[in-house]
Figure 1 (cartoon, rainbow, N blue to C red):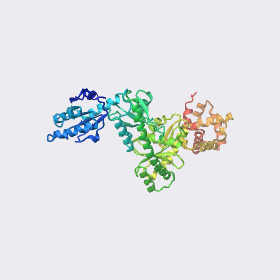
Figure 2 (cartoon, helix red, strand yellow):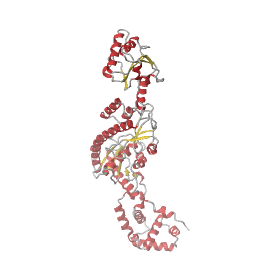
Figure 3 (spheres, helix red, strand yellow):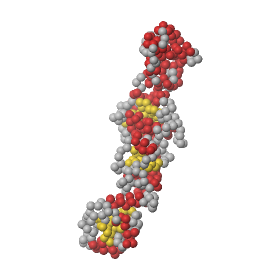
Figure 4 (cartoon, rainbow, N blue to C red):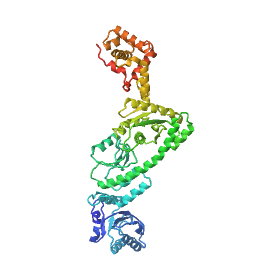
Length: 524
């Protein structure tokens, strides 16, 4: 961008006061605003210098103008843009000094903000794709300084796009969580963000970092293609990667504190004071209510151990649930857990976004369990036990697909049994049903079907006979045989419950209610 290009921008209304033709072709490298009497140390070659002329006074004005302009010439400034607001016009002393030292001079109308000039220069630089492909040096230096100061992604994005008011940019996770966005960007719901990343309509640049799991990897997204050079976007993405790696290093220390909290919660009878201290170390409130969530992936991918993969998934899931602080770590047995402060919606937010998080790695089943609200530190051990039981239920209900189960949803015998280990369910079913499970015996299969139908219809002989298309006497006979083989009396409630539970425990598919299967049979 040349000086002449800036002066011809009608939106700025700049009025040329002095320049020679060759000076108008000077290349502009950046912009500096100053009102120091001697600005030489702060001006770089090729920069536009903006000054409100606060330093100039009528008394001694010629000498002050001489020193100021001589400093600009020494520094190699491309042009001086002098504001008219302070003095009503640009002093003649300054015009004469610029002519003596060969520094182009233009007046800035009082109604024009210096920010508008700065934005115009940098946006024009960013837009000249055929000539300028990289970040301006001053922007790159500023962004690197921010990363060194552990600035967050929101600050990085705001600074990276500060001189491009017309550019809208977001940083999304694969699950659609908005990590950062430029000022004024409209809010984007998680599901919409996932769709935007998938449809390819805008520009998406991956923020590649080996320090995070696939569930947490950032993506720089611009809705309008073509507004910013691709190389520049990749440079910004590389800076964001450094930002994310810095955050990952800090999080490693946070995980260690969470692991210590997990050790306390894993062992019953931990002192409340010790738990409170561990909660404070993790940045959590010392008093509840809280929610405990556990998760597992049961898989390894991309060089990440199962625990690291699951930690990433659960960290992303609880981040979706709300802006509150969460602590993610591992229990002594390796199970990944999180403790989050309870919100008005409970842990529903986590369950709502679970499919989006799981969708980041569709080939890896992601199972989760959520305990009921813990009123205080003393209740966290119980909440953890509930969450682990709910996790077992999720694993049983959908072993090959992702799911999360809230312990409050285990309201029936069929759902409650899903949390019992498969080996225990199988042993109970075999013990109670005995010979009725012999698949080689056709009569055993008929008895099993009769038992299932009889219990599903509340012990009604007539209804059982109708559904199975049998005579009532045949049903009586079969029930007697069932009682003989199982040693149970189907006229007693407790024995009926035992047999009903045994039917539900036969296989993982027993999570569905036999009553539903029987009641849909056509009656004749």
